[in-house]
Image (cartoon, rainbow over all chains, first blue to last red; front, side, top):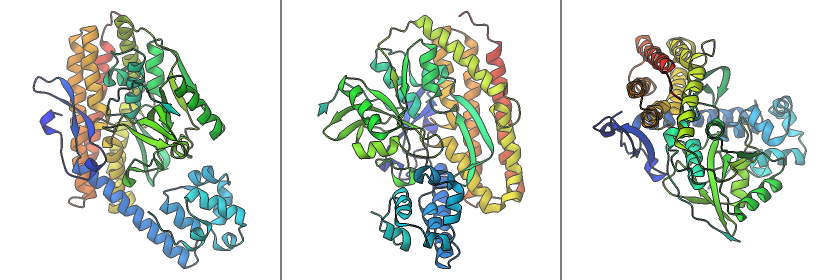
Length: 135
Length: 340
């Protein structure tokens, strides 16, 4: 890529940081330049987050219809798969699978609920109600 | 507590290259630039994991496993390295504090999900980010994050949280740094460059199957042609978006690290004076350009502007062409007769 072809799209990245890109100068030698963003990848990120929002909403509906426990909602909200949640809580994956079912979730001890709440960075009350107030 | 040292923050494209370069500069090894660290560390790679998914999409990597660039670069230059993981958060913090107190700067592997200075949209459960902790003021650790323009800081709690992020590649508080100041001669760098290139040839050319190296790139190309039918338009679009994100996200220098590798070969030429290196560098520039053209094609699909099977075929063919170009480039590197 030539230096003058480095995209400088306004994508919101610049509010965070500009990034270093390697490109060639007029003599063909490599040099570095800052880029404030590229629309192609900004959209890639954007549709990824839209999909995550969809998943969160779907999970919420499932919980409200009593098809899944709130764990499903929070796993989507915190982008956690079974492996990550297992690592944060110390529960086995098959245990989590059980807790994803509303009848098992309702029987969870305060202590176990606390472990989940900590992993999701919410209070036990928020965990039960899905009522989260994010800053 | 006040511990602050002369530390020169240097922004780089990729975090691990940056940490490596900055840590080496700080012990007096000043000739190792980001491209040299990347090339000597045999950082260029391609890997498309079968079955495993990450964030509901394909697991694709454009560079070597995290940690390898620092390790290989220091090994090749005979720089002794200290690397430590910790069982408890307290021992991890204690060790870090002791390092800082004795005036050392250290590399830390961290997860980005709870990395507070990253904006929310960049925070995934990615645990192989690298930063330098270079000092401490009161309760705040002074942080040099190589992908950022400026230095920043984290509270003890914030740092602990990212050092003990969980999931794939969990850092376990991992800390690493060159053990002592060393003198590195040009001749050592020359040899390290040769060794790095040979290692990279191996990883890009000699792994059997179609998931890694140049064959892996073509493998993905062939898979992409089937994505529309297999995943539907929305699913396939999300897969392509993930490919583009891995390829172009902050830290790659653009074109899935291919431009950094092209820059490395140019710099290698200043140590080896082999004109072939300049020619082969151009092949990697071409490859990087094609990766970016492919990203534009992918964006057309995930934006819904295009999306016929023919469009997926064009997308897949880009990767098959890239695979052929990189294969030729590595074959050319293989033919170079090195003096050292």
